[in-house]
Image (tube, rainbow, N blue to C red; front, side, top):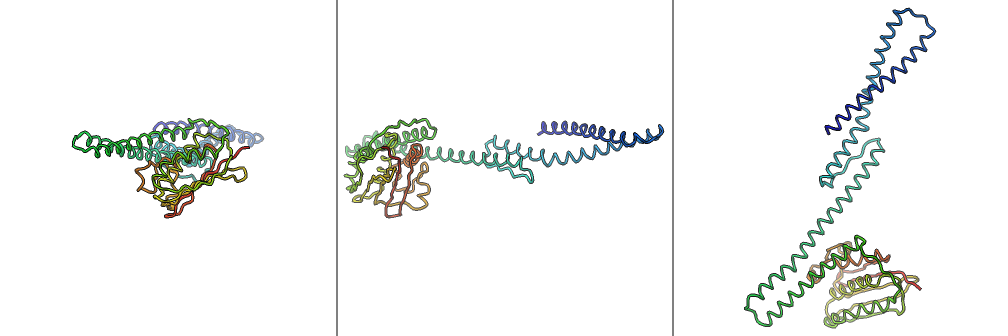
Length: 348
């Protein structure tokens, strides 16, 4: 601020001399033109010159004071507020919002841009903090399970059945941890556009059926009835590996949230130039509030199934659908089940 004060004083002094010289030139020319045809003696001319010089000094001072006041309110004050706001941002305070100026649209345009920037930075900082917090929590849980049960296995006091059960728990925890890390890496690569699309023409019908059959052991174990309505020979141009992540996540969620003896419906049909894939289950459903955040990272509306996931699956699904140019919708009623619909463009 001291540097700005020095610059302000230097500029103010320069402004005074500029006003003084301008006023001296204008008044001197006016004086010359006005008195050119009038005969005056030397004393009258001398007195008039002194008076004129004094008037120039007074008028210059008045204009200078007006200039300083105007500059302070129209330039110095807004610039100072902007600088103070930017200084706070550089120190990590993204809650700063610079108030708008009255009748100064030029600075208001700059202030609005800075305020939008701080809002974005604040949002990014919140997401980063939440992400780190959620990742830490999700990693800590399986690590604690692995540590605790591995210590019990080393005790040497367990039966064969207990050792087998504890080993299974450790294996499940390690798989969950591996899946979490894998999903984080995939999501990070997708969000940073580090994954390039490998587009090819393929039969979506066969692709969808193949992904569904990979869950055969799960639906047989839970005695879930599969009701497929898949239209044959619907071709699309997209990345089959990325879309496989979409189907696998939707199928996994449908089986996870469907109670034993329930139903899962998988349909594929063509509507005009679009292929419509619907995965519907007869599970617990989701509330309207949960539906608003269903595609947010680490969000889990049903905490009773939190041990079976990490809240990244649908975030991955949404990101993949976005970058492949598709559309995804969710329709759910609490206690009656959920329906996810994916729409992609077909090709001839």
